[in-house]
Length: 249
Image (cartoon, rainbow, N blue to C red; front, side):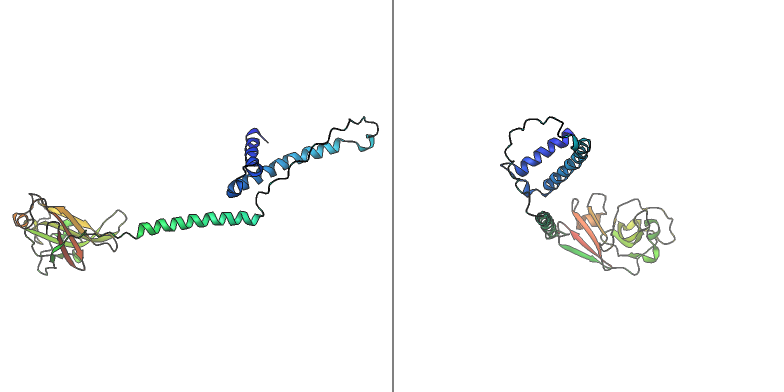
């Protein structure tokens, strides 16, 4: 056994058999002590067998026998590590149970706090789909024209909802886009992108599409008259309608 293992074995034996033994509460240390003691016995066995083979019992009478050495006191009995292997497993199961309970408590603590998505912000309006809305803009907005809805002018803004690809793996979701009504193109108009206000956002799975923005001086004058510059806004798509939320009411 090398010096490092020897030192480790001595430390573990002190914890197991010494006056301040504390190893019973440490299943990992108990297992390591047994491992090192087994290793020590395995390494000592070949040496003892070799010594017995080299000795010649028939020549014992001719070989001078050394004077008998004084008998040493018997070593103190070892303090048992654990009463049985069963106690080792009981200790390990108890530790695992504590860890599981702690993890469950932590998960419960994280999941019980509810988050209010609108943080108490009042809804100021509801936009409903306009069957007469011009959908020519759907092409340059990236929407599938067959799955696009248009909404009536809202203080100088026009809102579209539609289905669009949202990532490189082909996943699709419903999206919302609001732009200047003056930029909405007819079906036969040139397919150029709008130059004015354009804000949008997409949902994901069960999460609805929404658009959040701050009103700036670039918004149409009617919109700024209804919602002053600096107002925080949110449009949320819900079952075909669009809820309008304003932080300033």
